[in-house]
Length: 593
Image (cartoon, rainbow, N blue to C red):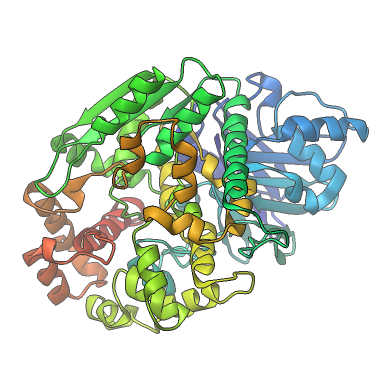
């Protein structure tokens, strides 16, 4: 929906509006419709708006309520804001706008920090309490909207992207060795609060952070996902019906809560196709769908048109189809890397970037299928993990980690190698209480931690780079809570996502339901050859890469000699992992800080 930023001085000085200006310049693409700033002594806010709800100027931000003594910047959408607004009006609050932004202000005035427990949606926001001289920042339960910050003895700054914080200056850009271990073990996922940069952190999902003007902070968690069976058992039919209803509700609210048209990113896979089917089932007419495809490689197709076309025909959608040649992928790849708030290796990042460019010319909001595989057990490695022997960590690591610690040590220069940080973290998360079985623990880890900094972040970054808001019904927290209680066998049966397949049966073509898992593939970034190989070689052989002293040359040369022989356990290119991080650092960090 927007880009937000702010600064709180901790040294008694006034906030520097020129730094807000520099951050806003880096956030412009997230919010092309309006820009605003606000200052109050030590505090300054900046906001770039993408107008989705209440398109009037009354809903512009930063939003200030002088009567309450509160100011707010907010990125996201609150889907239950009409009900909350009614409740707050009955409590005596008066509204001057008609959207969800002001509801957050009044909710904070009424319920304090506990207001986040009542918000249903995706959000990252900051509230300045003028009377208490206190800053309150919050992030949604599923981490759908980003919120980064940097803190020194002089200031606390936050923004929707790392690039905005770097533009403000004063950031320690040294590489974080713990984050590097996560980056190269978990497909470029660096769980909050870390990032690859020592001087930048991010608010974890389902957390709030309170910052006082003396620099003291308090981090609080307001939601946890329970992955245990309910006290009252349900039959399979009851589970399927409950999931069906919750998913319909999630899709419906993400359609209705908008004052602009809403489309669907249609990959041709079960997840996005089901979203189209549920919209049609609800009686929605003139559904707009968007699909992208790329050049094939001998090992893999680059498009899913044969399946998306069947969905379009079944539901008679207003369809937009785009085919991107490899030459265009390589030419535009630097732009996509510039749009990454953190380095991401998912091969479909550029796909979403190029698709979003086209989609943004037609609509401002789309629904997307991210989250269904994690919530409903759709990945091929889940059954493999389930059948494996050993501890939770051993079963997970042997089927998921991109490289073991020994290879990590072989890859990096000794100065960047420490302990096996990723194993320590994953072991801790898998063994947290509240998961009944091993697979319950794995799915909870994926849903609450790993997905946040891979597909969810990727879709937010690539769509918002074009002023396009992506909504993810499968990550509706009420649906996620329900699914987490469902027995794992109802998820993993029949190759995974059994519940969704049951819901889809009869609603859409069987060929779409029973097909192999689909996504937005870019085979040229998986089977690295030709000009893509030369592109990566140039990056890793560059003077900047050599002077950085991150990678051992022997390891780099081994991958360059035979890139297609070195894939991760889930079939990612190890060479691309190295090249992407170096390229991201060159384009986003070198010369900053």
